[in-house]
Image (tube, rainbow, N blue to C red):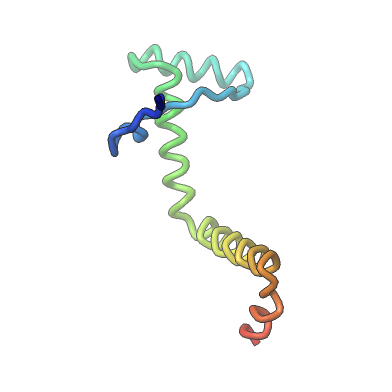
Amino acid sequence: MSNDHRKSPGEDKDRQVVVSVRFPSELLDRIQAMAAVTSTTANALIREGMEAYVQQRAASPEFKKASETYIAQAQARVATVLGTAGEARAARG
């Protein structure tokens, strides 16, 4: 008998993973103080801050350019694996 647990469509959305992150002690002190003043946790404050950072960076022209470069490089690698790299270069002209 299988122990395979079927998840509902929204269940993975709230899944959290524990990670280890190093902070300079002064920054951690500031984060913990801000969390105490705003009646939240340091974890919540860090998550909110990272969410805002990722959204801001993803909307930047620098990220758009970097993502286009990343995609082109990934496509070139896949073409190499498939043996179609020469065809792709010829098509670009």
